[in-house]
Image 1 (cartoon, rainbow, N blue to C red):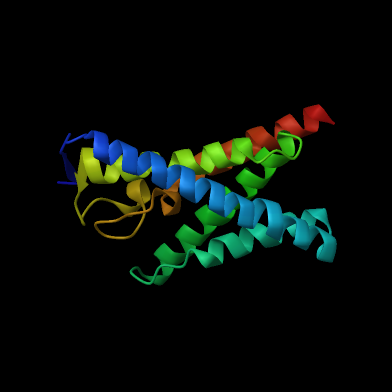
Image 2: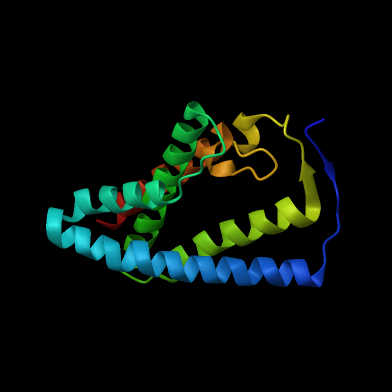
Amino acid sequence: NWGSWVGALSIGGVLNGLLLGVGVGVAEEIIFRAWLWEEMNLLIGSRWGLLAQAAIFSLVHFRSDSGVFAQIALHLGLFLLGIVLALRRRLDQGSLCGAIGLHGGLVGIWFVINLELFQFSTVAPSWLLGSGGLSPNPLGSLLGICALALCLWRQLTALAIAR
């Protein structure tokens, strides 16, 4: 009862997901990981700047359609994503390409899955899909937070090796 397979993959839906992913990826990475992060670095230093841009990124994506616990989980997931994307840029020696691809890919693929392939039920568990009813955000799920934490751990390991 968590959902059903729709499988109505269309060229228009895939193109819409691709354009959405590229648009969101480019726009948000320029705003958050290029401009805002650089400003925060100048104001409060690189370590705090990284955390500040991730916190602001998380807060900008506020949703009012879920409870307090779901909001905390979603903002934790978005905060981790902000750090992961910033570290991706750092690992790419300042290039935004990897962060744009990762961010845009997450947005575009979830759009296609959520609107073209599956119809999720409102009784689907939030630990798996996140909160949001018929429009869940998996970054706020236990599965999403664990995946982001694993990605973060691997990136920190890669940074340590690169040093």
